[in-house]
Image (cartoon, rainbow, N blue to C red; front, top):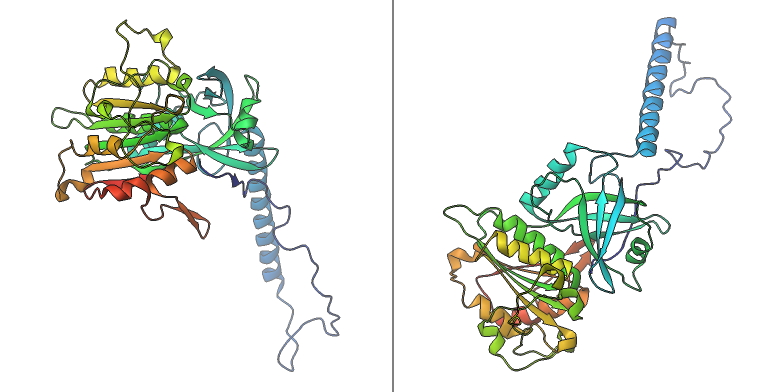
Length: 385
């Protein structure tokens, strides 16, 4: 879970300088000088020029302030990383008893938004910041891929869980449809290099949103020569989050040990059960599983997913990771083409790859630790989201 960040800079000081008055100095002479002679008054032409310059600068400053006030009151229509844009909440679709998909729409049609989204999607995994106006804090959330892709829709969708201790998530879940939500971005969380061919994405909870976004970015690069692949390991606490999602038979399902990831027991793992014999329908699936199935249908043979559910005593362990990484062709010269991305709650990320660190106001990756470090995967680049 990304930390809450105090919003800075969206309230401007009324004064450009400190308000403390300078000490008054009683001067006995009208002009100060370091010489014994007094300075002569400026000629009339020079005084006129100085007055004209002062008036021009003052007018320009007043005009800039007026434009800033107008922009702030009306709100910008294009998503940008400098100031907040007032999107509106148009729908909230429940995924489970604790999480929903939020759909946000910009204040008015603006094709520039599509250009902003497209540039971010081409780069990799990206997020935007939501502002909680009462507490003046913000939190980053990762948009889900557009559905259907490239449909020209300016809306943004987010999978957000209501955290009883999260001020921003509780605020978002309390809003009515039509309420304004101020967002700022995009922020590139992780670039996916063009040469990347294989991604193993380890997701916990709402970390599935960055996984779907990474898959969308990676698989759009498919052509006649390159067919990149993504394998997702998704751990959830309850089955309702991934209702209707079942694993295709793989070597990972042959393992016997079964414990939740929170137990932090290193060892093999077992994924959720294989699908039932009857045909599944979209109504049997949670909204997130429907999105996963849509991605798999769009890129057949390039997307695979394993589900792990705490309440079913299944968890992501070393065996789950090794089953995929050892089956992938790798070599030192191909290390830049293989990536492992980890996303989810802080405890989940720490367990898998070690905690991220803060230094000088910046969030850093920190050293690789956790069970991934113990696997000694030399040909894989690891990134914590």
